[in-house]
Image (tube, rainbow, N blue to C red; front, top):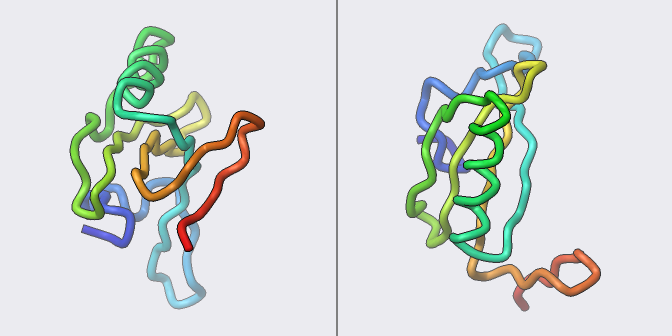
Length: 96
């Protein structure tokens, strides 16, 4: 697992390299308000033709997330983090 909980096969998914030939992960994140929204966004992506790279599941960090590639091959993580509060204007309130 890498730092975001993706399986090792996702680590170099469309990423670049660090100058030493080692890949670094590159993906986009879509934060959601709950597990139902994560499932809904992933279902919409699949209905539009995307494939699940990693279906939504409980994450080791306490949240819930899944991954799909966009048409250009970039990886998207759809996640819910119980520690983040998404405000009505779409901004995120971090704990602390």
